[in-house]
Image (cartoon, rainbow, N blue to C red):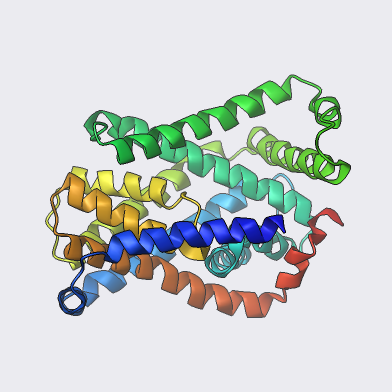
Amino acid sequence: MVKYVKISLLLIISCFGLFYAFKSIELTELLDHLYSVNLFKFFLSIFILIVACIIRAKRLKYLALPIDKSITTHHLFGATMIGYFGNGILFFRLGELLKAYAISQGRQIKPSESFGLIMLERLVDAVSVFCLLAIALPFLPLGDNVIRYWIIAFIVVTISLICILVILNFLDWKLIINQLGFLNKNLREKIADLIVKIYDGLGLVFKTEKKIEILSCTILIWLCYFLMTKWLIESCHIELDLFDSFIMLILGAVIISVPALPGGLGTYEAGITYAFTFLFFVSKDVALTYAIVSHTSNYLPYIIIGFFYFIRSGVKISSVRNNELNHD
């Protein structure tokens, strides 16, 4: 029952986002803008996105070396694309669990260990966005309520999660969770298991000898994302300088974290359209054009390449639904 309530809420959020994005839009004008998109730069952005995924797989390899020294970048690239594929078609970002299964397929890594690895990767991503946001913060229009609230929410959530992880490291958190009597036993066990996986993943940072390589890969990943953003903006014939493109990259990273239907449908279009029209006074139809084009450039390669690796891997969505991650 709770699951269906959550899905209904996500559906409402996405529908509201789509309503805002397409409100007062002339369909013929929107189609004209879409037809005028520079396809060379559009496909160039897709290419650089795939390069970013390869680098991401390389970084994941460096993180995984303490538990599997023979794991290959190609194996992790396939798992990464499967994860994105899953997030594009499944609710609640269950693609992360698909990715965990894909990483463990044919390897010595257990699904629970690979999930801890993914949690570490996501924490690195969150810290990266936080650092980039700190750089851009003085130049963001915090006088606007919508942008200010979302940025503050992202900062508060990120800092809170990090603080909780640090505090729990010095406490007997298993005892604390077991004393939460208002939660049923099954939920308490799931929370405890999740924290175990998070700390298992975090522990890999201190075990790996490839810290410089991990940092270098992270910088290269965000450089690729920046180039992709810049080329997509140019493909829609929007004139922004390098720094303004950087601002849109950061805002896009924050917007995509908003809960919605699989793939961020609705919330992404609404957030990007709002940011362009408010920050850079771009007409709403052109802003929506960019939102559609950029969303498509992300979604298509993840779905096509991810589906290919998903079929090859033998991973089953039913495994995720049955929550077999705990049965190692």
